[in-house]
Length: 118
Image (tube, rainbow, N blue to C red; front, side, top):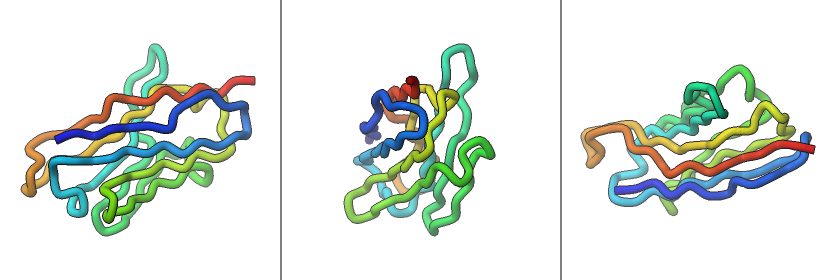
């Protein structure tokens, strides 16, 4: 049972990145998925959440710039990040919420670093 995040890197302000998170070991299609981030000195915060039926929630700070999506055929959740700002710099974590179908607790990926700087 694991989540493997990838896609982080360094980008200039205004640029774009797409994060990916590959899931294994549980029934992905019925699982609500989310992306969180944690900047140095800050608490981990919710960035975006995508339910198993497609409902989305976004942090106010990323609305209109970030898009969460999923592909149940390859058990992967994505975070498309556009118009990046320096304040988006953080370690981004994917998260799978617990459910009765093989996931008894919150599951976290290893984190991927996004740095937005000129």
